[in-house]
Amino acid sequence: MKILGIANDETSSACLVIDNKVISAASEERFSRIKMDNTFPYKSIDYVLRNSNLDLADIDYIGYGWKKGFEAEKHLLMYANRIIFEALNNPDGIDVLRERMKLEIQQDEISRKDFDSWITH
Image (tube, rainbow, N blue to C red; front, side, top):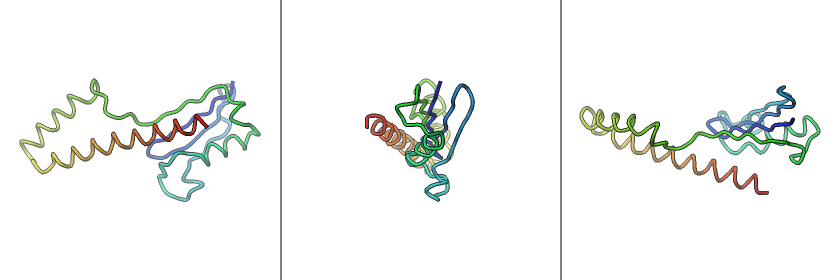
């Protein structure tokens, strides 16, 4: 079984696993020379496939990981507690928290669009 693993988070990368053995792995920053490159890992994917003389059509499964955006069940109480704390102790921190949440949601949308675009081509 051939599995292509793709990470599209703070540092994007790809790996190839064949029959439960990691055959090849690479981080996108290796090719772009941009530390902590978080763009979609086109070059990493190409590398791990070419390194094993495979094409995407030879892959049985693709595992794709990206940071998820806001998950109410997991984060709602944490954010509510943080907002209350900041409102009472550091009102200026509320704007920072709001901006951080906005950026996380936007980055998740970008990562998902990158993957959807890649997988449909």
